[in-house]
Image 1 (spheres, helix red, strand yellow):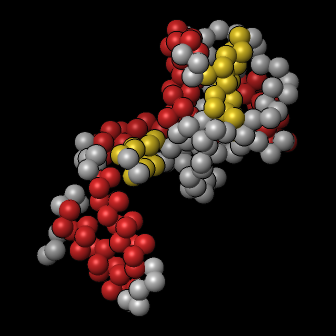
Image 2 (image 1 turned 30 degrees about the vertical axis):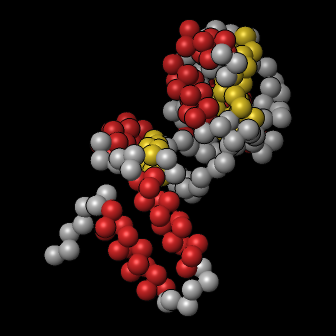
Image 3 (image 1 turned 120 degrees about the horizontal axis):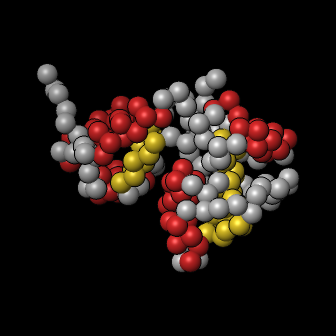
Length: 194
């Protein structure tokens, strides 16, 4: 199975995380970083998740998952160790057209979460289609040392130039050459002109 890469705007979207351990915590943090409104359900939560709820960053439902808990959510992430429960939740989400990710089981997932680097408006997603999350993580770690915060200024300049050129009579090739010149002058990407 291959996943079509897509970026979703989850700002203020209702996201449900089922699970209360370290993996659930990492998923909650990621959803919060991208603006999701997060609820978590589990019979037990680690301290870090409780801290997020004390700061009113997430809502906690302190009990076992119950049928129909996924209703009214835009996105569900399942991070439990109970394979039968994971399968039940996945089926319920699929039957209700709710995107679902079952951590470490891509066969039960309708989407996967890539490893992500964010630098302002620059977002780089790395994925192995769920086959090796560790490799995605290692590549992300390598790139984090190369991709600097200054890309924000370059993105703003390119965006401004693009807006100005929309009504221009320049050819596509001329526009691309101009964009390439701006990128080259920024010195943010090493380029081999040999």
